Amino acid sequence: MRLVLLSLLLAVGGVPEEPRLYGKPLAGLPPSNLAQLLKSPAHGQRVRVAGRIDAVCRNKGCWLELKQGESSVHVTFEGYSFFVPRDSAGREVVLEGRVMVAKPKPDDLAHLEAEGAAQAAAGVSIEATGVEIR
Image 1: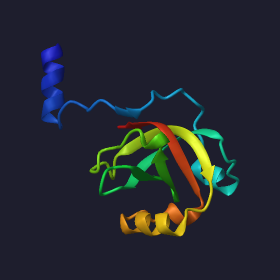
Image 2 (image 1 turned 90 degrees about the horizontal axis):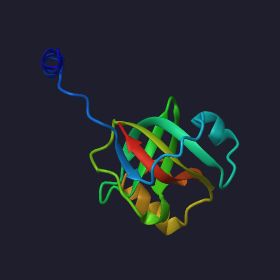
Image 3 (image 1 turned 45 degrees about the vertical axis):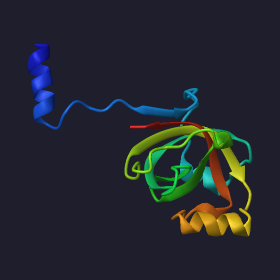
Image 4 (image 1 turned 135 degrees about the vertical axis):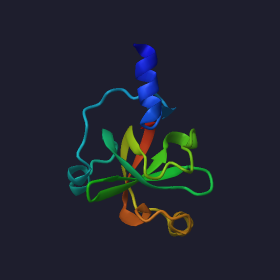
């Protein structure tokens, strides 16, 4: 039976890839709606957000932009301690981290925009502690 199931999976596109974890394991926080979170962000609030990776840092994979419905947010990684694959755009993602409310410095903003970070200027971002790419 297992051989039949494996053969069937391979025939329709292969065995599904296991989710990949970057950073710390996810703690199981309740899911947040990104649009609501962006309407009234609370600096330091711990959140869990799911969506699609819209863009990734082209140089190192040191940030991503997460899109959920029509809403997007810039995501960095806690303490610059981990990166995600640069070819992750378009993949589904679940992440946990802290909401950050602060306008980036002009030099940092120019650097991020040169790398393709469209949401960096928004003043609200998430500093992820863990990212699971599916």
